Length: 82
Image 1: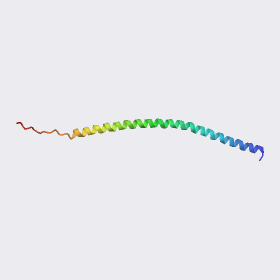
Image 2: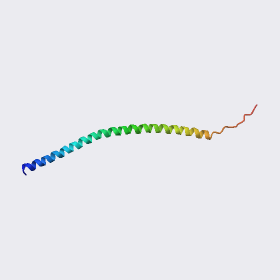
Image 3: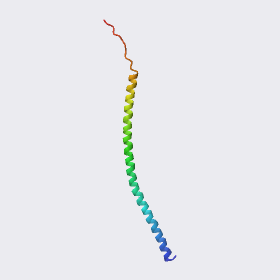
Protein backbone atom coordinates (compact mmCIF):
# COMPACT_ATOMS: atom_id res chain seq x y z
CA UNK A 1 0.00 0.00 0.00
CA UNK A 2 1.31 3.33 -0.88
CA UNK A 3 0.59 6.64 0.81
CA UNK A 4 -2.06 7.68 -1.75
CA UNK A 5 -4.23 4.60 -1.27
CA UNK A 6 -3.86 4.90 2.51
CA UNK A 7 -4.92 8.56 2.34
CA UNK A 8 -7.91 7.58 0.15
CA UNK A 9 -8.96 4.95 2.70
CA UNK A 10 -8.67 7.41 5.59
CA UNK A 11 -10.69 10.01 3.66
CA UNK A 12 -13.36 7.40 2.90
CA UNK A 13 -13.60 6.42 6.57
CA UNK A 14 -13.68 10.08 7.64
CA UNK A 15 -16.52 10.76 5.17
CA UNK A 16 -18.45 7.75 6.48
CA UNK A 17 -17.99 8.91 10.09
CA UNK A 18 -19.15 12.42 9.12
CA UNK A 19 -22.25 10.99 7.43
CA UNK A 20 -22.95 8.84 10.49
CA UNK A 21 -22.66 11.84 12.83
CA UNK A 22 -25.00 13.89 10.61
CA UNK A 23 -27.57 11.09 10.63
CA UNK A 24 -27.24 10.77 14.39
CA UNK A 25 -27.76 14.51 14.85
CA UNK A 26 -30.76 14.47 12.51
CA UNK A 27 -32.23 11.52 14.40
CA UNK A 28 -31.86 13.28 17.74
CA UNK A 29 -33.59 16.39 16.38
CA UNK A 30 -36.46 14.30 15.04
CA UNK A 31 -36.70 12.44 18.34
CA UNK A 32 -37.26 15.74 20.15
CA UNK A 33 -39.86 16.87 17.62
CA UNK A 34 -41.60 13.50 17.75
CA UNK A 35 -41.73 13.70 21.54
CA UNK A 36 -43.70 16.95 21.35
CA UNK A 37 -46.05 15.48 18.74
CA UNK A 38 -46.69 12.44 20.94
CA UNK A 39 -47.23 14.68 23.98
CA UNK A 40 -49.73 16.82 22.04
CA UNK A 41 -51.59 13.73 20.79
CA UNK A 42 -51.73 12.35 24.33
CA UNK A 43 -53.26 15.59 25.63
CA UNK A 44 -55.82 15.58 22.83
CA UNK A 45 -56.77 11.94 23.45
CA UNK A 46 -57.17 12.58 27.18
CA UNK A 47 -59.42 15.60 26.56
CA UNK A 48 -61.63 13.67 24.14
CA UNK A 49 -61.77 10.70 26.52
CA UNK A 50 -62.97 12.97 29.31
CA UNK A 51 -65.57 14.58 27.05
CA UNK A 52 -66.83 11.20 25.88
CA UNK A 53 -67.05 9.89 29.46
CA UNK A 54 -69.13 12.90 30.48
CA UNK A 55 -71.36 12.42 27.42
CA UNK A 56 -71.86 8.72 28.21
CA UNK A 57 -72.87 9.49 31.79
CA UNK A 58 -75.24 12.27 30.70
CA UNK A 59 -76.87 10.21 27.97
CA UNK A 60 -77.21 7.21 30.30
CA UNK A 61 -78.91 9.42 32.90
CA UNK A 62 -81.31 10.80 30.29
CA UNK A 63 -82.04 7.34 29.02
CA UNK A 64 -82.84 6.03 32.49
CA UNK A 65 -85.10 9.02 33.15
CA UNK A 66 -86.88 8.49 29.83
CA UNK A 67 -87.43 4.77 30.43
CA UNK A 68 -88.74 5.43 33.95
CA UNK A 69 -91.10 8.03 32.60
CA UNK A 70 -92.19 5.66 29.84
CA UNK A 71 -93.21 2.96 32.33
CA UNK A 72 -94.61 5.34 34.94
CA UNK A 73 -98.20 4.34 35.72
CA UNK A 74 -100.19 6.66 37.89
CA UNK A 75 -102.16 4.70 40.44
CA UNK A 76 -105.90 5.19 40.44
CA UNK A 77 -106.50 3.98 43.92
CA UNK A 78 -109.64 5.51 45.34
CA UNK A 79 -109.66 6.36 48.97
CA UNK A 80 -112.58 5.16 50.98
CA UNK A 81 -114.44 7.94 52.63
CA UNK A 82 -115.25 7.41 56.23
